[in-house]
Amino acid sequence: MLHRSDLVALARKYRTLGELRRSQHSSSQDQVRGPLRSLSSEFPGSLRELDLLPFAEIERRAEALERAVSAGAVEDWMQWMHAYHAT
Image 1 (cartoon, rainbow, N blue to C red):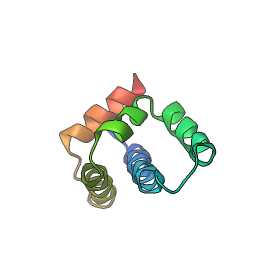
Image 2 (image 1 turned 90 degrees about the vertical axis):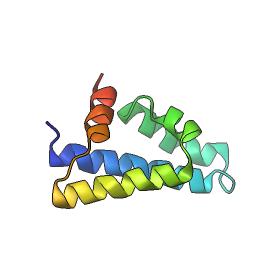
Image 3 (image 1 turned 120 degrees about the vertical axis):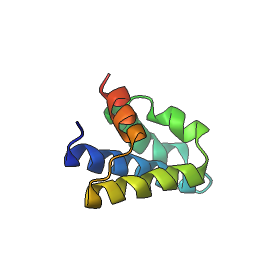
Image 4 (image 1 turned 45 degrees about the vertical axis):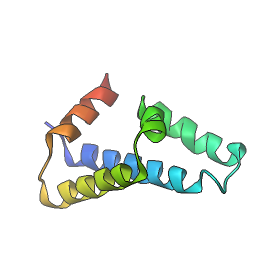
């Protein structure tokens, strides 16, 4: 069972991934090293998502998670992603 705080954290993860993707051409390695390290520490495997997921999918997931936080409609992939990061 996902708690609201889990959904908030996952939404923040995808928003951060989106910000990192948007800034990849305008930021230096030094500027993104800290955020990348923090993200991968809190959400193991998330940097692979940054490399593999299209930007539109990152945004779609962030929006779906934000809706779930508000309305409580949790999709299966949200449960799976939370479990993946927890292991």
